[in-house]
Image (cartoon, each protein chain N blue to C red):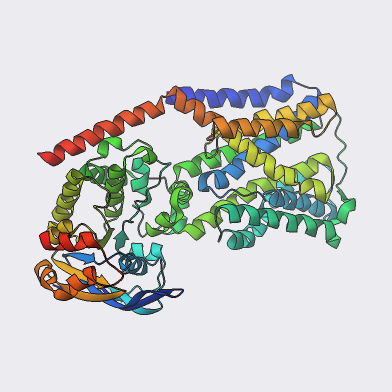
Length: 335
Length: 260
């Protein structure tokens, strides 16, 4: 069972590694890059919001910070267009962390609905700052150093760097889930006050998780800016980004390792494909909306969890175990 | 016997309601101390003040002479005061064993949590021992949300105990539990007490309190009314008055008090 699971991961990795070698059409490799970016962001978002239950709808702010880090640094440092700019990707992540720490310090004081609303507010503050601040170029946006790689080859380096980020966040998310820190996040999700009363330093734990999540999303934003070559505040600070990654995580299975990856893989590739095929950029929104309704109604825990529970007959198992233990408890009490 | 936990002159108002009004009490080391009183007399608020969930307007709490007033709940727990809640609170979406492991890191810094795995072998075996002690070891790998109410009570007791606190505060351990389980919980507490564990118990079930406790403090309208052995308390006319008279009327209490 354990080995079968590992084998599946390896097969998936092989498929992703081989994809740009087999499929060379730039239209599809572009879809591949976007899909990987969303897989990384969704997985990273899930590592904090999914595990801790703090549903953030403002992570687009970190994506934007990453994108502007890439654009501004490459321009101001007069970097030669090319592979060297990839070094700015982790820097975009670090800048996102620098923003996340003070933001998190404030917003993580409130919970549930208030938290959701306040993260949306923070997002729009970030977007408006990018539009109005002088150094961002305002609504005219910024043009990055123009990379002159051939059309057939252009996507490939981006694809593999994005894949590396996906592997990094998957490994990180898995090790968080196995660590004491991850257990503390889950405890916070289930009952924060109780966790506090059992010695969990909830404020520090939440802020750490929030910042770690921002790091990977910032890296993705930086890579995105380099990939696109031209950024505008309304596109790198995109409210639909926030909603999309939350939706993808919910669809796959909030708080699971594989769910958000699958959700992003299916939804983002589908969205890109629809956009390419029907030349209507908003068609996917209708589809996403309906899909979301169906999932929330019938599989509120996400597809992965719903299928796994059905497969292992979880309900039945639990009922039996609880009932038999109840009988044992009563019997030992009467003797 | 030395005094382990001491609350002195605790006052706390919520808006216009004076929930605690200069309440004092003490828990002797190695004792089982009961805390009773009519509904609304401030027992749970006192628990919340002792464990750091509510900051008192005035007064102080000390554990073995160390001032713990105004400390955060995680710090209070690390110092050695563990508690359960009246409305049983467990972590519903992680396994029973994982529930136990949340509590095993009493004095660990948060940075340590980032670098270590969820559990060590010794923590798991300690957790399993406690689960076995309360009788739900076979449910260890189940999602805790599936447990029955009684099993949740046992789990909550177990995960407070696994951290080995110096004093355990139990908020209505017998509330909403059937009689067989009440007796079992009472047996467990007695067993633990014999091995040196100190308890402070809020409970409405008079039979439970009077049979179990060495000392009982009666609270009324935010003040400590009487403290003494169960027999002294039962014979005290002030106690009967508190339960019978005034706005805090509670008919069941009176008969239970006499029969208990």
